[in-house]
Image 1 (tube, rainbow, N blue to C red):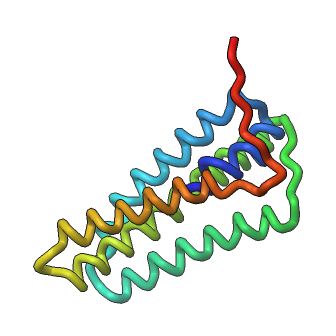
Image 2 (image 1 turned 120 degrees about the horizontal axis):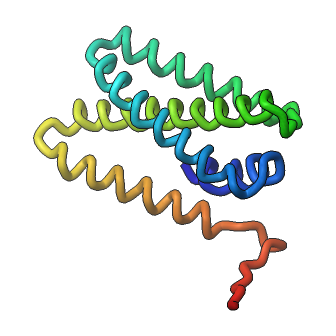
Image 3 (image 1 turned 90 degrees about the vertical axis):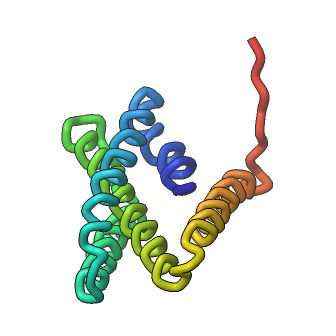
Length: 147
């Protein structure tokens, strides 16, 4: 999630489409995340479905990562917009698949303490996301601008 918030929007969306499209890509990320969470939760009932959902999520994430590794240049035409919004949706689906599977496993491991397990998972997720934001390379400096 920290990648989608920070690096993807800063280094991919903003230079390609401009700052005004960052919110649209994040909205696409969360819309896909919400829809995929509902679908993945319905499919997380049998071991075969869980494996299929995980492989599907890994395949999507691998495709987007390969696209980033090959440094695809996004143009400012319709295809560039579509590709970036599809990439945002794919990252949302991947996030939903990972979170759904982790919470399903936590529910199986801790059937008597599911609330505490889910709370600990969300705390760990929040701490790791904030750590990813604060762990910037030393050559990047935070700057406060006042009007």
